[in-house]
Amino acid sequence: MTDTVRVRMAPSPTGYLHVGGARTALFNWLFARRHGGKFILRIEDTDRTRYVPDALDDILAGLRWLGLDWDEGPEVGGDYGPYFQSQRLEMYRHYARQLVDEGHAYPCYCSPQRLARLRQEQRQGGESDIGYDRHCRHLSARERAAYEAQGIVPVVRLKVPLEGEVCFHDIVYGDICKDNASIRDPVLLKSDGWPTYHLANVIDDHHMAITHIMRGDEWLSSVPIHVHLYAAFGWEPPVYAHLPIILDPTGKGKMSKRKKMAGGVEYPVFVREFRAAGYLPEAMFNFLAGIGWSYDPEVEIFTRQQAISRFALEDLNSSPAAFPFDKLEWMNGVYIRELPEEELYERLLPFVAADLGLSEGELRSRPELRLFIPLIRERIKLLSEATPFIDFAFTDQVHVKPELLVGKNMTAAESLAALRAARAALAEMPTFDAEALEKRLRLLATELGLKTGQLFGILRLATTGKEVAPPLFGTLAILGRERVLARCQAAERLLETLTT
RNA sequence: GCCCCCAUCGUCUAGAGGACCAGGACACAGGCCUUUCAAGCCUGCGACAGGGGUUCGAAUCCCCUUGGGGGCACCA
Image (cartoon, rainbow, N blue to C red; front, side):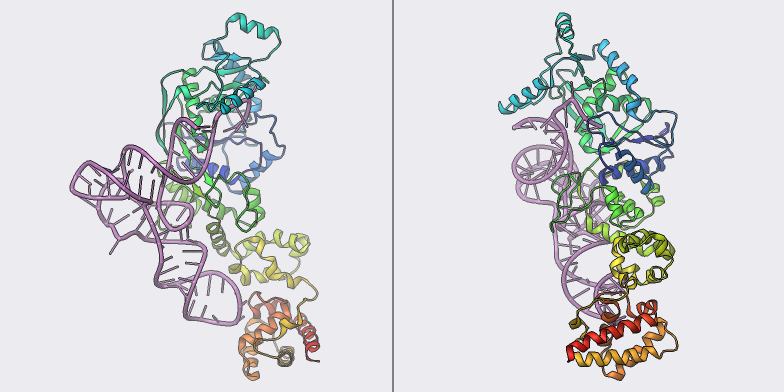
């Protein structure tokens, strides 16, 4: 490849950044970085009716979160701007006019109502081909003038050949041909003077010197239109590589439409939702790269540098893939475990603070979270799972059902005696660190003739209020002697209610 | 309905005519470890959708069937 690689991500600010869109961006980014090219971000904001005000910010934030930096586009500029289609209207109108003047396109005065009626009739009539009937394609100058006189503002439609076929090559899908007759003259310029996707996309890709187009395969069927447009303009089309879409976890239907999981739980589809759920951006990156592409048949975990070094369009898969949530969760756990403690602490902070109702500053001023990190890191798969493991350390007292304090195969009285003995032993310990605690409590279990699990289970419930908690000795050390003794005493009172 | 695309373990994938009685990973099951839960380690389960061809030889090429997906807007 002699030309500089220039690829683009062209989102429409009609909704938040979707995982599918993120994956498309990711592959474009990988390709650009692999070849030392440019990754361009272009905002296709030509649909004024579906515009969502905060969508743009969300898209930019989502891409940044994933580490997909763009070389040209919003907030970074570039030599091929503007990068918002809403600021390029004049150019689209110019080319639309040119197409009409040169006989490649024509004005169409059909009302939306007529088109809707037409479609309905075609459907009901069982017609094989649905679409515009080219009513205005052969209007005489006089007829056109008559419409104009009525004040009807026309749209501009592309004059697609009536016979023959268009063919193009796609790196992922190979050679694809389509009969021209099946392509209905598409609208290029809407009656409000704004371009449709087809027009704006082709003009911009050409003027921004885009060399490769990687996008979701829902676009595959519109390539023939674009090929005709490039031909009409006398431009060279870029290289196409359509990406197989991501299906929802059940494999039925695409991921984009929000659906329910088997358990009735909604699963995330927007990048912001994955972020809020506690997924790590580096895990998302790794995971997304593994759908439709494979870094190495034997290697699942790889860095972005490694991905860049091996990425090739020829290796892209052509079959659609169901979104494997299980694998994502596992991978996120892997990345959480690989994070340095201090880094994990920083990432956990906002999640835990919010859950606990504390400010980050307040949480930071307390020692517990930091101390718990090594104890919980291999127990969580999501950042949002940390709080339930440690919240007991942030409450004045724990609430536990008395019955739970009774040890396995023990009576309430025996449990109470064990707890009292433990409290006495703990009160007398010269130091209160995990190592010393383990040594002393193991000895105590032996002295009491109890299995370790029996004694430790009672203590776990008494001090944390939970049946599942971080490792006991470390937990006791973090709570500190004072709190541990107080909680034991409180638990003893509860057990007493069972023995009297 | 019409057009296009896709088809390997439940899922993500490796495989580009012989190296495949099909490899890896997740999930699942069992075991080890163990104070709970995890993590870790070991083992197991498990697929070339079906049918025709082509070929000495097919998961790999062709055709048909079936299944799935996408598209058919003055949306992108």
